Length: 359
Image 1 (cartoon, one colour):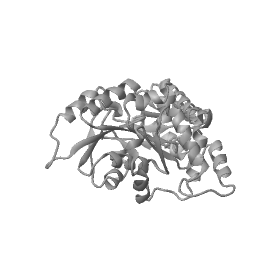
Image 2 (image 1 turned 90 degrees about the vertical axis):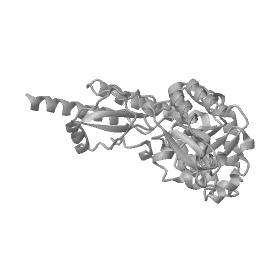
Image 3 (image 1 turned 30 degrees about the vertical axis):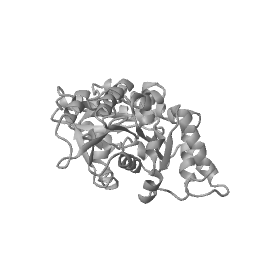
């Protein structure tokens, strides 16, 4: 019953098998191999356009290098105040961007509203005393497990582009979002106005594989040098490429994401039946619920693993009970129905025990 993170899951068997195949024989280093070329072709097919692709091993590297490529050191990146780049990357975007500034915007359910973005851009910007807005970064899915629909991305991208900002999408859980929306990948990325994408595979079932995707190849000039200088060009590059190739082959990435989403739905439904409803809609593979503290203790005593959560983007009308704790539950490609059902059964028994005690 490990619902701490999809990072806690292992590696999908298909991807592990691809790593083993890549280990046979020899291949040129630093991306000059057939695996990498195959990934580049596959990405062009998936996105239905000409692109430039750069593989790295971590989402932090993908995000930081993508933002640095578009943002001058005196520039600002606007993002949700709880975005991963702002709260969980130890200053990497600022470091690799030579001192760029992240500007956090508030927003319910982890999402930036068009009005919020417009208001922020109407503020005081520009040199020599102020940073200049250079990028808008959106998380897909968000830190609240919610999803930006294509039309929502398009509206925000229109506002950003009108003011000269590029648009970055942090797609650490992009597979979960696309699986939920059931739309073509192109429609939810470059056709909606995204300029550069961090395409995540690690949370979806890879060992360590992410990609920076430029939808205008011309904007990728010197990205190869930037990646190398940052220490993120892996010499045995074929092992990253092999993971990504397997992840993208035959839409494995979507099948794995659909399973994770289905397990999240099953878990959310089971908890809702006990009167414990998610604080936000379950749109990807993350569920946020307020558990009674007695139930939380009983679940943990039974071996359930998950994290307490602190957020400032709860619905305005929601007030957590004094005896409740907000927690995050994350499912993955490896989550089983048995994991979910056991968690629900323990929660139900805890609820029953609490009723008996009150009597």
